Image 1 (cartoon, rainbow, N blue to C red):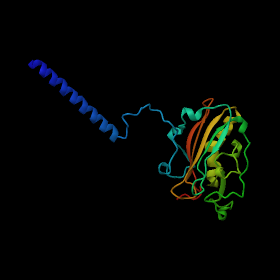
Image 2 (image 1 turned 45 degrees about the vertical axis):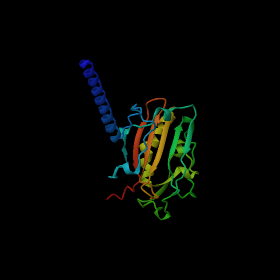
Image 3 (image 1 turned 180 degrees about the vertical axis):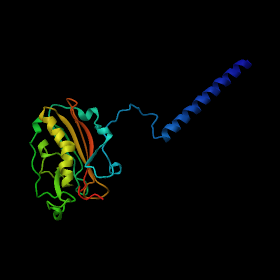
Image 4 (image 1 turned 135 degrees about the vertical axis):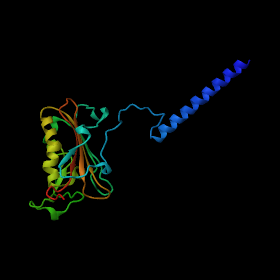
Length: 232
């Protein structure tokens, strides 16, 4: 009988130890920001969009690669149903542009329109419209007209310094995508202006693109919205 009691006590102690270990592991996971009841698949549910707090500091380069130049679109965002589309995000409470998402097909090449001069996006200043001024401003398309972007929709026009609009944005993404769709490739594309606080002129543009039917395009860059000739 004594042996059976000792055996029962040993099982009870082992159970207590297991429970204590479980609670310790749970406490560690919670305090490290991991939900122990969630599925940890290692795959992001949505692609990552750069925030103002994470934007790189300007040091003189026109643009920088992010994530090794690789986009973070997930499989659902790259799904192509056979037709191109464009989605302009709504203006925010300060009337600033927010984002542009698109699936660009070869048929969309050169179907856009020039910027409407009557549209004055936030941060616009007529005093800077001088060809000799490095701070000259442009009405920049989030989705370029050559890629099918509208120049008549407020949601697609953002105030950019001329250098950011061209050559920076052009060679960082628009030229690459234009060449790809002319060769028959379809490209998933996103451009997001990055604003600091309540500022009306964006600090830069987070741009991602990925071809959906081949491996010709995969980019993730940040284009600085800075006057090129005004570097401290």
